[in-house]
Length: 301
Image (cartoon, rainbow, N blue to C red; front, side, top):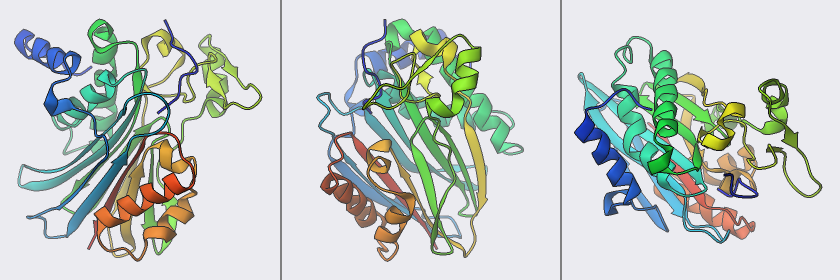
């Protein structure tokens, strides 16, 4: 994600040892938190009565910096439920914030005491506390930030999607594209930004930017801009039934060059989700996308 035009000058409380381990893992960029450079893979739920399978593909961009996109694609058993956990974190000004999100955001969501009773409230609370942790520890995690799109599939029956920034989720519903996230662009939130003391620039040949720097109005981190940014996610619940075929999660490296309907139509007939994800990233490259491109396709049924 190349959102900054120039370099601008949490989770729930944890035990001290755990705190320093988390920070050390991110600050030292251990191999377990290495970037998702030129990578693909797939998997499926083994225990859900409703079939869920996924594939992903990630390509480093040509923006002159190392890969700053990270992803999560895994399944967990919790309280006799099968959870599919999927996310794309598109970082800027370094990769420490997206690395931290990859390792911790889903844990923070699932540890919220009301997750099973009120998933939306739990997601909102975890996004807020995670952002607070990142800001409180910016000396270790750096000045950068990250967008996010997260998807939680519960027993193959319910899809909970949240996002901040311009990473996007699009479902194929009844054969057509339906965007279920909101692109948090500065021009759309100009009134809020200005009310909080910031400003939005729109220069010729460039996209609108918060304080002339960041091309999204919501993000994790970005301490120097945080007074004028939001980390409040948009959250959507989608019941998974026979009308929902698959969902695409992708960073803006894909959506800058491809419309929602084009993406859905391109992979509608591709049953292997990894092949579908690779086809989408390949097409984005063919359309001259220069940014990091990360894509997850989750297929139902």
